[in-house]
Length: 154
Image (cartoon, rainbow, N blue to C red; front, side, top):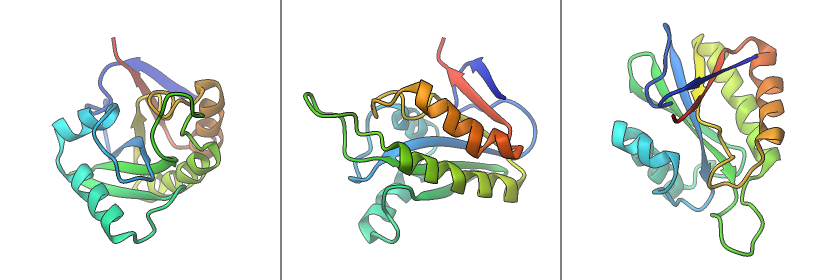
């Protein structure tokens, strides 16, 4: 099961190692949505994302990079959207890429014995449907024993 709570996903609850997960685009653009909260809290995820895009080393849909921000706390930059939302165009979320990201996130969370914390990933600026995203989380994370908390702002 997914635990739903009200609060700020950049301030994850609970004990032990934690990963804060969010969806990024494949353009190298950073500056709207949940990433603004991430950048206000920690500079490392944005710097790592921009460097990753600049080098191009595995920077593609479905890829994930963990960025350490504190002892026992990482941010997962997940490339799960193609481009950015534009009027008159389809939503940039790519469910297959998000599923690949979540599978990689599962492996990292199990390796680190970490819980995963997130907003409703992919359902904001990426334009995805939570009804399609939630089952991916259940299959790829909680179904393998990874504790997941989803944060909704009050």
